[in-house]
Image (cartoon, rainbow, N blue to C red; front, side, top):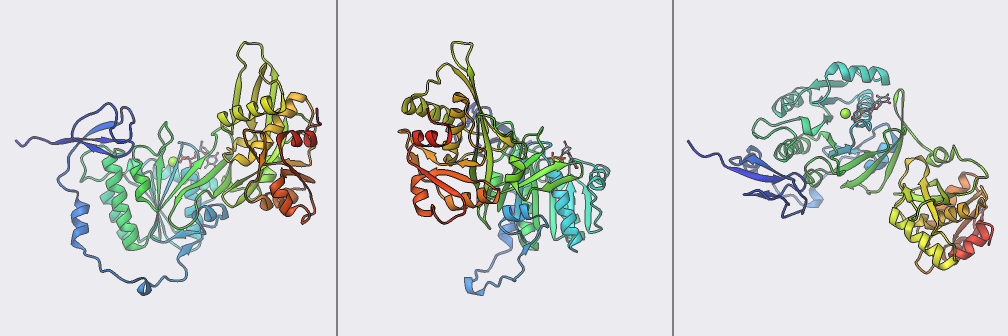
Length: 455
Ligand code: TYD
Ligand code: MG
């Protein structure tokens, strides 16, 4: 009997090796190599070689005018770059229970009621379970075809029969191809099934959504390779105990990334949040110290967010420091700037910094607002509640210009704020244009004198 040949595949990067390693030689991750039986040439690769394609020039390619499908949800359309591109492969990743299936079922309902066909393949839930969710959300389109299926061969069969415009596979880890011997969810399986879906999507012009589970480290289970293969990667994020969900584009061949869509999970599924600033500022307590409002930019969208800080005398030798929604190291750096450049003695204080609403701020434009919140709590002096503060802070305590200052100011104006404290370089260019007081500051000290009651 011929010996069965095996190989080892890395669950993270998809690298293949003839023998086992504790640490993957390609991506340096530990314990990610899994043994799999070697296939004698995948069916797909040989099939691809048969159908020889014909090269065409750019001028000869005709794009029909209506190549993008509207999803009926502006938040989703924006993240996708203006709607679904037909024939594209879209990966939707996220933690279990975050609402991926709910989002896609809602999408199916919208597409279905616009007269197009949707095939929803669920490898995780039974038809009855999906029906329960659908009736809760009021989804009842007769153009949605549901099937509970795990075999890729059967899925192909259903696609052939139903000829959907949009296909949803929930989730990729539960669908397997019988041609590959390894278990569903393994790298080879996920890769094989995705390749098969890709070739169907491109040849039949079916927009395909793939749900992918996220591992503990936060990557889509197993294969990074999956992200390389698809056209668009969306992550659905949020704290499971909060009702807000953020849909984030991380890769998009048909639009800009870094766009976000905000949703709220309620009793009847997800609702779009059209005015995030209003939502994020809604529970704000007026007149409390340690609270500042910053304007952060997510993609093309300006959002007002409240940053809170609480400093209290530490009862231990080493003070506690905690940051939620902003980078911990960035907060430490900003506190060091306050100590060194302003002379604020923070060494004996426990400090907690929190961005309200479960939002994560990654851009440095929030620096000045964070500093203001910390100083406000330390001095126990509140910041005027009609003021927003933003700007990047350098190590010398200088306030540096940020991009899209104008957009941020307009958002503040829309939300009824009266004063903006911003970098001097930005202010010089637009101080007198708007019906809102714009104050330019050069360094942290100047900002504190203006916004946090001086010394
Ligand atoms: P689900 O879409 O199943 O998550 P995923 O597919 O990402 O695993 O969403 C599950 C969660 O959403 C579940 O905890 C219940 C909650 N939920 C609501 O709060 N309201 C609703 O209307 C629906 C359908 C779900
Ligand atoms: Mg699900």
